[in-house]
Image (tube, rainbow, N blue to C red; front, side):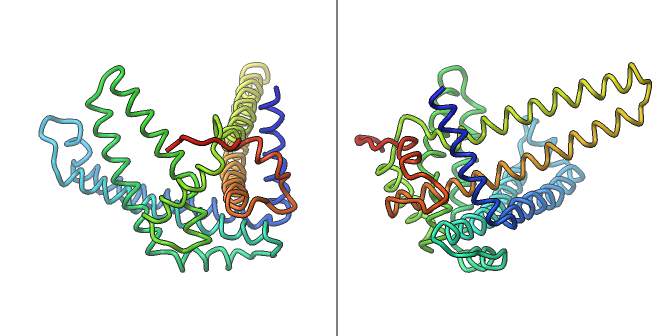
Length: 284
């Protein structure tokens, strides 16, 4: 119950930042639109050229892997670019400023080469872990999943470091590990907590949507009303996803601010973040 209460407090604190700068939600929207465009740009040519089929056959084409690797790089670049803009703007707010969307994008553009470099590293790690996982079984696949989790933990603060410090991707990874060593706990309850809260909200929306759509279709015999309820459910889930992404970025900015300076500004209770990241040694 204590963890649930702390997670809810983290969500509320992140939401207060969002209420102060509602335009922060623009960055996840840009990320979603960008990733959709990138996916369609790569998916259609791959299907038409038969590269997708070759990936599931015995005669795997190297060209197919190269295209997927390029897809990962471009996709990660878009995501990291939008996240850098979001975190950069959130840090300005946490430090007492009044950020604009333009300032966020300005920060991201000024770090573009470093963002691309980090996307290249992340894509390489992702491809290697995926390839090894597909060839592993049982404990081997479990071990790879643990390595993937450790990578996600180690790089948790890479985007804030890129946004604020403007260092290269390798140095950003080193800085992320260093900062997490200062504030390492048994689990990253904040990010997990935000995901859990919005996961439960999404689950509730899906259940209610299915119930009301079913009643509209069966009891009222109105297919139009059922479709309308389904559309509203999808819209609600999209909005929940955008808010979840925004709050996760805000929380990452707060953790970086706390790890770097020892305080998070007026929106977060420093003791709350400290409880989430209890100081420990001997990790990494």
